Picture (cartoon, rainbow, N blue to C red):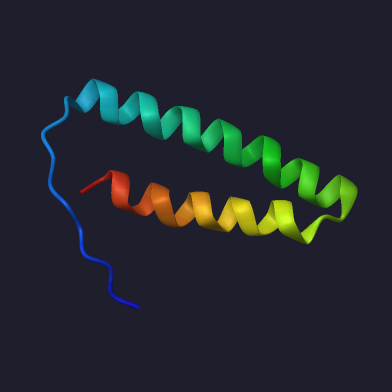
Length: 57
C-alpha cells in the first residue's frame, strides 16, 4: 500500500511536539481498548500509528 507523502516545512520542535502528543493519545487509547475489549478503539490506534509514520517525513 503506497501512500504519497507531502513535504511541508515545519520546525523540528513542532514535529516532535505533535509526535509526543500523538504517542500519548495512542497509549491512552490502547489501554482503553484492552480494558474495554473495544476493537474500534484498537483500530483508531492503528490509524494513528500510520499517521505517526508519516510525521517524520
